[in-house]
Length: 137
Image 1 (cartoon, helix red, strand yellow):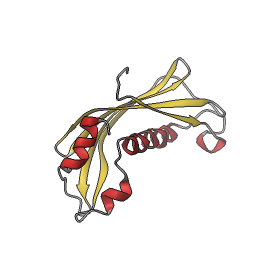
Image 2: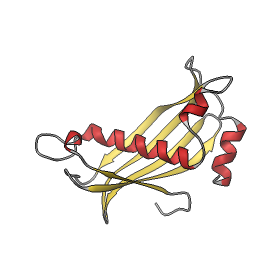
Image 3: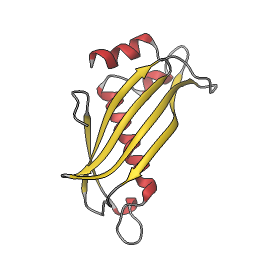
């Protein structure tokens, strides 16, 4: 994953993220991936608050996520959540994510997110939002 649009988020592993043995519980990775996506959106100037404040409020929902756990992370580790928006088209965003601890790949995910109205219907991403991904602003 080496791309100019690759964004990185460091996260420290806390006790609450682990199971009884000090190893990160598998569901905790979903929270880490979510934080990576949210901060990456923020980097592009897209916030959930602004989407909800539109005349037609919008939100993102995860339609599909394929996750692979490769190596365990443990309490006190500093991990790096790397996020890259692979495609933004229509109502969909395809997102590639990886979690690293130094040079060790911990987990990876392929995510399909959909822009939706609050009524639960898929909606095209607004042109001004899509433009932010294209220009990197």
